[in-house]
Length: 161
Image (tube, helix red, strand yellow):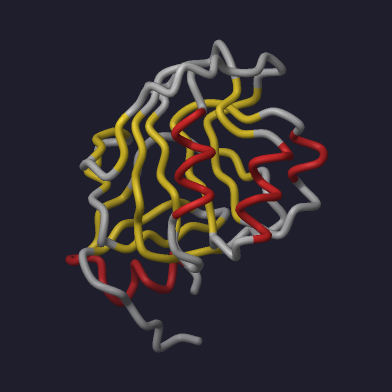
């Protein structure tokens, strides 16, 4: 579903993420129910979440906006694709960007960094996150494409097709 069409139909029920994100995965348009993880320069919980969340969901990662290391690369993206996770939105960086473009998953991040993250097992899963001028709450729904990222409390259906 195109975010522009959803905004035309449901503007009063949507929140707009105002952080500029870039698209890295093969899927350019994706949507699903939100699952969350909050980390800082440590992707252990990102991996654990990708291995356990339900297929069809979107993992939203608040990496504190750090540009010092990547929280996702080709190996974790492959896990997401294999498990049929619809997408990953990262307030942080990715790496292996050329490879990510061929992996069948939606990936949005604020940038790239070739450095890998630490592996200390630190972070929090399942809480409400706040970045991009919106709150990301597990159980809400996110819709993403090249026009932007929007959040809704309930699933939406586009009448425009």
